[in-house]
Length: 236
Image 1 (tube, rainbow, N blue to C red):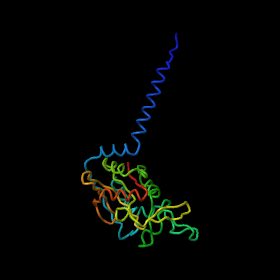
Image 2: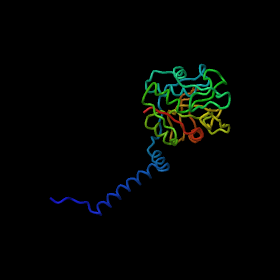
Image 3: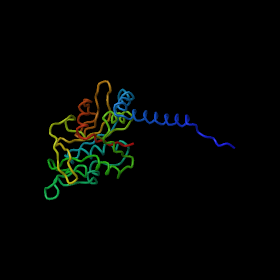
Image 4: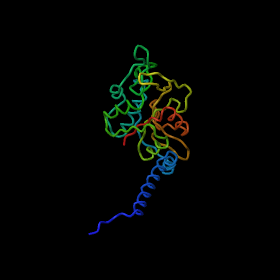
């Protein structure tokens, strides 16, 4: 019996097909093309009924855990802001006898329950405490804003780190921490994106200051999201 041999031409065609598929995949997943695809496939509008929770009066600095509580409760997880505030990691405002500032990527800096005595916490500790309640929580940090909105369009509310004015701020600070430089603002805030209106260019958020489906100009919130490091969490 003669052994079948692949001809040089067949091998060349196969290699070209593989290369072409790889090229198409790379182009599609490039930022501009993927973002354009996400925009075209968005619903015209969306508004999810995420339960509202107010950080006040118990946690004047607890916007992040309050937002996480709202996100988890949307999926039926039995939790509240106080549970999360007790279980999330905390770090001191200053460490090593004042040599370094606390790092919000490690834990909440300061005290949540004392006004003017706490700062903020970033995506990693929020993800870690969320995983104590559900394995379905996903860290979506470093994705473009349109990709966040696409998740909302598909039915997933998204927690983001933003600012109290939901816009770009001019009071960013650079802290020296034991792990390196970290960018922080006294205006740091968090919210849950609950919906959007594509035509009106409006994004709806549950604001832990006590506002459900608050309307925010799309461009403003996108600027804030980008400035605060594109930090986002959702539940799949």
